[in-house]
Length: 283
Image 1 (tube, rainbow, N blue to C red):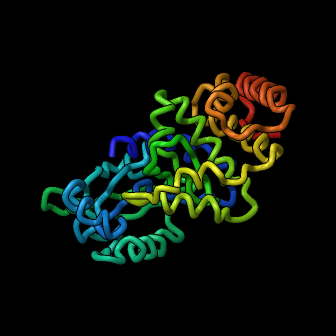
Image 2: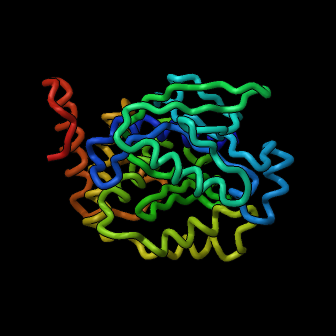
Image 3: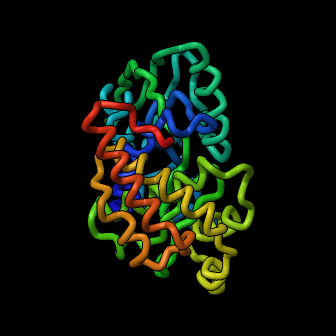
């Protein structure tokens, strides 16, 4: 839970402040995730129930920092009861069914009323929608260091989370994967398969090896993603000078030979735009 919360906290400014840079992923969001015991694989359902206190009703797992949900006072552990006057379902299909109901209620609105159960009492929140890059940020169950993006989701393994102890370093990892999602012309099924397997309680023994053997992106694609990542980081308020060196240190697939010069130029351009008060948008 603490590791997932850290991922969500570090990703939040990247997703919210990068809204203009992700036109295909831009959505108005409430700004929280919710799960019940059925959100996990069959083998993990009992653990989710006992360790996380999850049962039939969806409970708030994480609240996106800086979002309308946080401003309205939504809390981790709140149980979802209703959106506007529409009751939210419980049970095995609650997550997908609730997402559909909430999505319908959000259409044409700038805010929405969400009622939760807290300490046995109903509490209503009026939540202002937050424009953001709509991507799922998840923790991968593996000790090997790795990060993946399938076009819609970003996953960082437990091993890489431990290899990036500072928030800036974790932001460098997340920004690069978010950038790959933004730039992906189509879904990435090989990455999606790895994410699905590393999302389980007990991944298959070969999953780490399979992840390591994924075909790397081309040097040109990698350079584009790193350059876009610098802008995402700068817009989110993270320091960017050390990002290229960090990417090199953790052996992320190499970019083109001109990568150091291009990224140094991008860092200079970002600094100049900041000084002039110009929008932080790649050329």
